[in-house]
Length: 388
Image 1: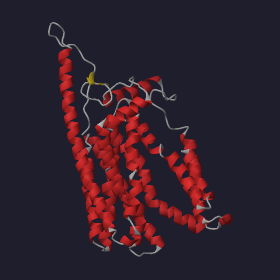
Image 2: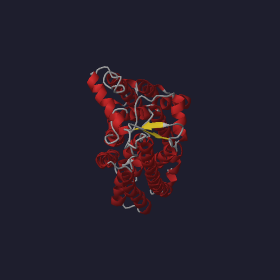
Image 3: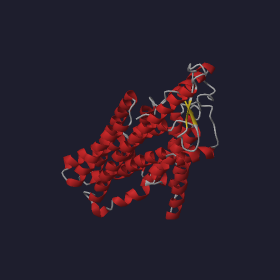
Image 4: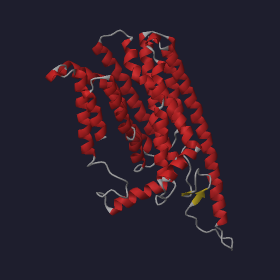
């Protein structure tokens, strides 16, 4: 994060296109591990019944920055443009880069490591934190393998790819956030009023995301907490594609952001609860799904050519289609996980039968083996079932 802030701040020193490309390349290089790393850290501390809300709180920072980033930029432009001979856009990179470095240094003294390796926890606290994760994740934390084996298991597991499709369809539709100021600008208000109008949809999406994630954790349900909001997001894109009436189009922004990003964190939490162990596989899966999801940033800008304004019909139709695809794949993953749970039930019954002693008295079993785990065997606690 510190290097990320330094590279971002160096953008202020760019004077030509080549320099900008180089800075952006290294910026992406150091930024890439942050979000999957943050998700992995959360999944290493919180149970799957707690993860959606915590992920939502993490992502709230991103949503709120989208809403208020323009206001910060306007303030810098008004107050620092030309100060010490530096234009406002350079000041913006200097300030935000410096703040990032400062926060990262503070965070290095606060953010914990794994529960069993965090030094400022007592022995009892480490044991409690580790044990509750073992109980809810379905397997023991002692199973450790190589990084390569984790990547191999993630790549070979079909569930990872279904989750990746869910995320990429969401990020493809969610790319509209990059063009929210452009869409609001079509309302023909002043610059300040336009920036003020950008903020409320993001604030609304943040509140919706927290509420949906809280409900998902409380109800121990993922699928329909993704499907239902996405329906509203799809409705927002359809409204934006069908009318230029100001009130309706502004309402569509709330539906778009609330629908797509309201359930985005639930999908991210579903990754960790579906692929809890071994930790190497979970880490690789989180990174892989986020990598595939970010591919949307490559092609999505081309759906918004200036010539398509103010309706941006092509983009809105594509985004509605992405929402529909997300719904279909989400329901498909739920069906697959239901079948996996049935298999685990059969394995558990068979394991108990095999453990019966010669007198026909069943021995106590503390674990079952999921022979269907991609890339190798995974030891699971009895009673473990995938979250639906």
